[in-house]
Structures are given as C-alpha cells and as structure tokens.
Image 1 (cartoon, helix red, strand yellow):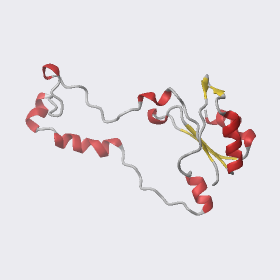
Image 2 (image 1 turned 135 degrees about the horizontal axis):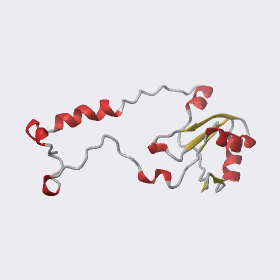
Image 3 (image 1 turned 60 degrees about the vertical axis):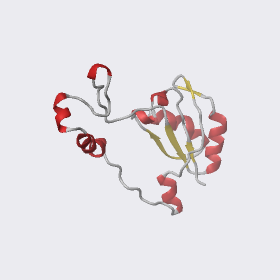
Image 4 (image 1 turned 90 degrees about the vertical axis):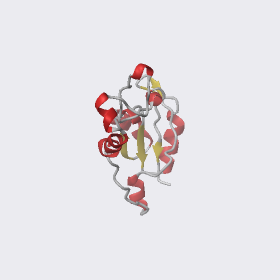
Amino acid sequence: MKKSLHAVFSQFGKILDVLAFKTLKHKGQAWVIFEDVSSATNALRRMQGFPFYDKEMRIQYAKTKSDIIAKADGTFVPREKRKRHEEKGGKKRKEQLDPNQASAGLNPAYAGAYGATPPVSDTKYSILSWINPLFPLYGLW
C-alpha cells in the first residue's frame, strides 16, 4: 500500500515519507508527508474522493506535525515510549480479582447471566476504522 500511495501522490510534489500501519486501530489510514504545504494542498484538492483500492479517499490535513517536519523546523520534542498491552493491563487485572473468585473463574466486575463470565480481552478495537479510510496529508507549515 505504501508503494501505491507514493506512486499516486508523487505527482503533486516531493514526498518525504508515507506511513501506513497494519494494526486494526489504524487500518485504512495512511499519512503522506510532503515537503511543502502547496504540494499537500494541491494533492488534497485533486485527490479528494479518488477511488483507491475500491474505496473513495477522504483526505484532510493532519492534526499534528509529523516527526520529520518537526525535526526539519527545529520544534521536535521526543515523546515518551508507550508501554505494551501486557505491561499496562496485565497486573492491574490480576490485582482486581478476588483470589477466592479467581479460582472459580468469576469476574467480580461482571455478574453475567447464570454466573457466566464473558471472555476477558486486553485490547479494545474501533469497529468503524476500516469502513471509511482516511488519508490525511502532512505538509510543512
């Protein structure tokens, strides 16, 4: 997908980077980072609604600067690394369970029908993330 996006958007100006993630949270989204604002604006206007992999692209400017642009203009501030799901939620979930109920398989936060406990999931997904893909553009501003 990155190669396809680069090929489609390179006609509008120099592209510094294309970010497209495969995670469920970001599925259908990509960020095309242009060298200048005029290229990004031209691409936004001309490619709005363009069919890409059988979906119409909805294009908008990014809400924040990309790291590449921030480094170029000297405003880059490193972010704190995010913790993995197991490290964040694993210990808290175990501490919340009563040891007497944990062996019985009961979750005190949910008293489901007939004492059944729903499956516990560490991750939460956005169901609508794949329906309307977004392709925001970055530019130098």
